Length: 534
Image (cartoon, rainbow, N blue to C red):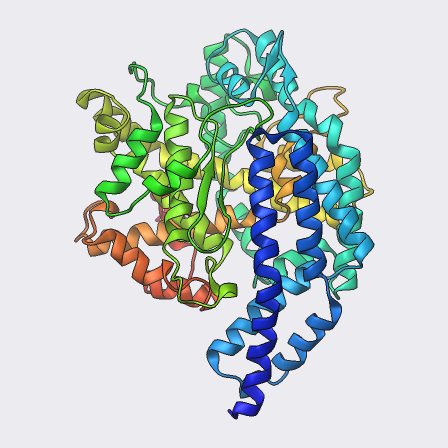
């Protein structure tokens, strides 16, 4: 191509980066301060930062200029074409009138603050860690129900503003030329909506019978443990408030001592594999605090290496898994080459970073990790590792069905945000998870899932990420001559050179093919999920 065509495109992107990079950095820094327990004043700063950032992204003239250049994509160099594609997706996702931008940011930050500030009551004020502990250990069904309902109670506070936010997001998406917000988010993420739902339909059909059989077994174990009839089982009888995980009663029991503190174990494990998690952990906020967001996530503040983890760690095996997961995100992000242009200094796709995080999380299935890092005896670690490997199929089945609920709920909710979302939620929960709505319950339980509010249209990335994680495990195991994936030679450099360094410089299907040797498919996931059906 000629320099005359190339230069204006590069200049346009460079000008965009000079404006947007400091605004993004300021907004993410303010978000971090607010979510680590900063209080109302810092949430106002966060809102102001997000308004400035999203106003800069909402410019229709800039989006039009980028699209005009991409209309001549065959004349562009591959690098410039990719830069413009990434910028177009970012601009299209934020195209809006100024008043809509301001309203959206205000609504989202207030909902985020509501989740951070919310503390339910189950006899006393409780955190989400408290709810999890009650649902995992208590045989008192009154206490279990109170814990479950206190988790759901945040939905009552945020459901109405969430409906208004959905309608606003839809208006913004239609202004950018999309059917609705769900349609836009799927398309700007380089996914095809029809193909995505077809994939989910196929997975549902393949897993319907195996899940039904597994659910019968799980229900029998739960009912026996609680001393109740199968017909009396209620949503609060499972050990996760959304039935995202296998009930503890359905997993083989292990009389293990209290587990070691997760941070030291995860740090040492990743160092052994060739990664350097220390700087990330040193910058992170890892333990509970008043007003702190009660969940876990990883944040890249500046695309220059300031990566941090927010967590609420307790000395439990679940927090070992969660921290390994978040450090997988962090390893990916910190491994992206700083020599890439700013807009390409991010992961190839949300599903690729989720795949890596899920890969790292599976370190906790290894007896060596359970012994050396979790603190179990060798015998207990070996037994638990066998149990966890045997439970992999069950965990994948349970989680895949939960993903069906969220993805289908969001697709339908954005198609009609004024509809009966409460009923829609429970229809999907019953269809895909086999759990009945409690009699006479009328409550916006869908609104108690934080992702639907603050990370909308994201859950498909978890299931596609599971498929990528399974594909990565198989590829790395091949490199280890059939041994465990983490025994692959030069694991850190292999992942860094094969995936991390390239950032978003390649479309995600190409990034996955380069990392694993094949395009993304469901075969390896189904082999892990349904081993008897191979």
